[in-house]
Image 1 (tube, rainbow, N blue to C red):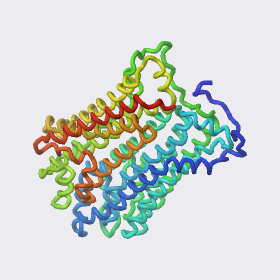
Image 2: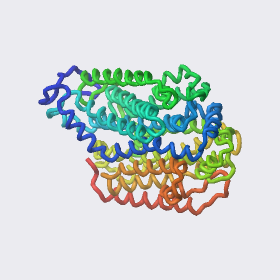
Image 3: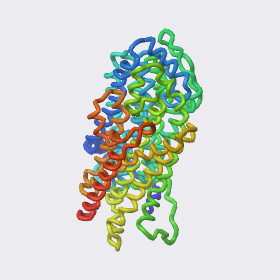
Image 4: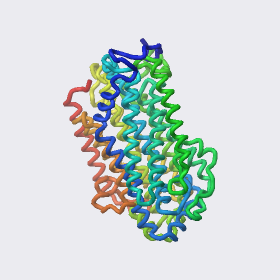
Length: 548
């Protein structure tokens, strides 16, 4: 039977007595499998917000400084598009403004990964079919996945609430619920996407696109909204229609620490319930492994003659999406360069943070260096994902038939690695082009600064190759390394972490361009390290058994 075939099925499967039979066992299994990812993601997301109060207090220690900063940031349309308007100039209000949106996005990403992993990915690998032969109800896997996502988002909400309680219990609770609720909205979106598609990759892609659309809608709406008036702690201004169309905009409009709007949480709850109900209805109307969106049939005769062509076919959609995202991101951030001085004003501490992140006394150069560094750290996520794609081909059983023929392992892996390493160079170049086009100056130095991030990106990609080739069961640890580098680069300077901690990331050793003279020693050293890691990983791949 085709995986796209749909049939009505009984309300229970196997020997289960109901549609939820086995939910407890599946939930415990999901939490055990994610026993590292869930706590780490919750601590990073919640800790980002909870620790923000201390960093912002060191920047803006007096009420006058906070009021001046809030007014300047709210008047800057680029900053409103990135973070949203400031609804209150209290310390809690600034924390909600600076970290709330991105924490909501992180919660959404964690939720979609958890839900898809324990629903569609289990079906795609065939494990769910074996489980369903036992005492497992029809809707138990979906329920377990949503409960695992609920654990993540509850942990985030509790960390945020506890960490900011000193700024006001009501505001801390509102912000925690808004962030955790946003995560659950997209957990339900992922549950729905898992019913519609027949591949985990497509389910993640659709949900990720929904997260991106929600962020864009909020940014478009907020860019034209002036925000609060900061009088007597009350917020003024109103959100535009695009902001209200975005679940991320709903989290913002809870207005934590600014006269909380508790009723907005009802919108979040309604979105979770409606999507969850739809996912439950759909999962009861299809077979395990089936989907409602059938895969388009390929040609009668295959046209892929090489392993490289197959790798390109598998990864071209992902590369296209990342390329467009980096180009658009460069255009957006490039438009903010001229307003960089307005962001920090006369605040010397804020200026020093930008210089710590960018390494250059000239604020414009520091801002550009910060942006290209962030693009580099995000590009590492693409590189790791691309390197680990053949690992997924192995675990799903699709690689074994290929390697049973006259196709060597190194040649099979080379196509994917070419896309990982070459693709990361492409997307970084596009980010530099976007920055230069939008900024309108120094195209050559900006493009060079973007490409100077490649050795660090390739080092993390090389680590992923080593783990996949030599220790495939630990391959997913490459995600942890990339996430750690992102956290160190994004949060570390604001938290005033020591240089030794920042240097744990390969990005901490790169020259901070544009601005200073190019330093080739760390660039060449990291490139050599990346080459050594890839060589060792491929040697391990040749020696070990193929996963099945």
